[in-house]
Amino acid sequence: MDVKTCITEFLLLGFRNNLNILLFLLFLVIYIVTLSGNLLIVVLVMAEQHLHTPMYFFLSNLSFVEICYTSTILPRMLNSFLTGDKTISFVGCILQMHIFSTLGATECYLLAVMSYDRYLAICRPLHYVTLMDNRTCILLVSVSWLIGSLLITILTSLLTQLTFCSQYQIDHFFCDFTPVVRLSCSDTRVIETAAFITSSIGILPTFLITVTSYIFIISTILKIPSVTGRQKAFSTCSSHLTVVSVFYGSLTFVYILPTSGKFKDLNKVFSFLYTILTPMANPFIYSLRNKDVKDILRKALCQFGFYRSIG
Figure 1 (cartoon, rainbow, N blue to C red):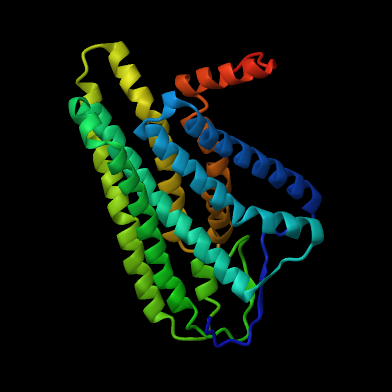
Figure 2 (cartoon, rainbow, N blue to C red; figure 1 turned 45 degrees about the vertical axis):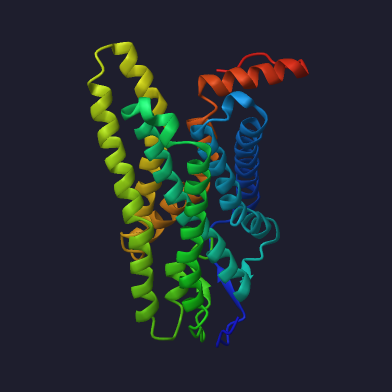
């Protein structure tokens, strides 16, 4: 990595308070719940034949992304709370940003794929099995990972060409793109233009696909004559719509609102929402409240003899 800089490490200021032990315990619980919930979804989908459908295939991939997503941020944060060491090496910071951004871009495409899957299931049910076969599912997930990786690799390559002179304090709890670029003493116009283009390619099309899919989905649901039918159809996509709203809403606040002045702390709050809380909540929003998943989980717990009651 050819980087012209006199900075060898950055200081992540994170959350400024004296409650390190309490924050350590809080984030440790969040991390354990996130890993357990998402790993459970992945294992259930792999092990249970009944869940070998496109919807659950995409959900298991999303859960895998969330596991990796959280693991790029929380372990270092936990170490910081426990030891008080807020430093991160220059290479470690770039690597964290690269992995985190790649996973974020991939998640945008996966959410778009999942919305398209729900569109086919609800709006074109007679053609669903033909249009969303195993080969198509694998292709869509592979393309999501490929585009996400390619877009961020371009930005990372440009970032390694910047010079960092004396500023080393990042007022954030992880190495995000904008705070890091602003510390550079180089001309950042090229990388900022590239970031705008790649963001447009990564976020705008996926957002439009998601919104368009749900316009057609909601329109189709409203045409169902039976109240029970409408409720059943809407229940299959309401969870996804909730996650999409929180995810894109948080991204909008983080990357569109100013990151200085009174918006600085608000920026951290919404970053915390989409980087840490959303991955923890997704298994419960998406799958653990789903009847099929709960029935399978009940059977599995009964086999081990400690099932009492779920939901």
